[in-house]
Amino acid sequence: MTRVEQAARDLLRSADIREPPVPVERLARDAGALVSYQPFEAQDISGLLYRATDAAPVIGVNSNNPKVRQRFTIAHELGHLTLHEGQDLILERLVRLNFRDSTSSTGSDAEEIEANRFAAELLMPQQLLQHSIRLLVQGRPLSDLEVVRRLARRFEVSQPAMEYRLTGLGMLTPA
Image (cartoon, rainbow, N blue to C red; front, top):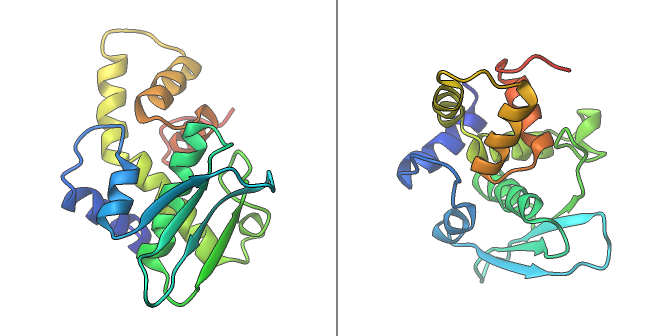
């Protein structure tokens, strides 16, 4: 387990989160952040994290984005807040289906990759996924697509996010 996964799991454990969906906005507030929803003029900006030495950190969320994208944005910015020191302003560009922006997808920005991994583990914790899958398929044959759909609804994430997460964890064979 990486330090990123451990940080997300520690946060879930300290908040006593035992079932989905993870209350990500509450976790951000508990971490001392203010969450602000505003429509952003630039459509490719999903969110931002602003940290000033004399004020609470602010997680800005593009209110024009779907709710599932907003939840991922909060989790991603909470990842930066938890894992990374020293950057006062982090702008997030709209990510591709594999959860990486154009910078992260090159593999050159370790902090963006870590924040994405943190968000995935926070919103779709491996243990909760394993438990949910067992309950979901118990005695019922379901297609992979139906499993992804139902889990995405249960965890309040997008279907592509769930598919990517399950594939990354080896719980789903890539299409």
